[in-house]
Image (cartoon, rainbow, N blue to C red):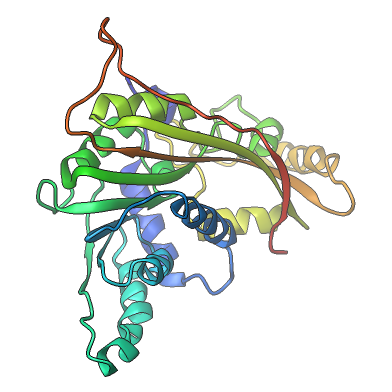
Length: 309
């Protein structure tokens, strides 16, 4: 798809924010939503028959999901790639001391673990070199999914699987509604599920299965929400973002408008959670008229999850 101007991101700013988030670490628990989504992605693997030889965690962060994948597939080689070197340092510290001492004790081979800094549009991997690509909340940090999916399709083997999660356009809708927009959009934009599905097909994957779930997080304060967004480098990075503050009066009015949404002592925050997976076929299947085959299984569930206060 042609990237709309509002989706074009300041990549230099994103790198600085991601590195800063890696330096600060995740001890505050601000990544609670990413951990919950990882759990749900892992549950989906219960229904998928795959025995991967090599696994790529794209946007691996501090290595939480690499540890989870190692538990599920103990014989697979794991590779973690991320833009931010501080995250990779934390991943190494987390994973290196726990490289299966019991397996070594009983003479079992310990698969190697590789960590490297890389851009998702230029993966330092050979064609067809991995069996499973896992990308948990990496896609919100890109402005164009097609080049990333093409790289995924290049490095995954025939019959291999890509599994990912992202946020949809309704994420942070309350914040989007209360902040002034006369000088530009102040809330990060997210790519629609159907656009992601179209990009998967265009990249060469077959039969994408996409799910969407609406979840309501709750926060005690707006300040805590902003703190979590900053801790996850998730605040607006659009090239079209306003470069100045909205002004004291406008800011106080925005806070007052959000307070009107408070229920049972908490402020609601919407998260549109997208999960998807697709396979790399031996050849792309299509209808006689040339249209690619594609399956969508959208779901719409309501759920409330409490944020950290």
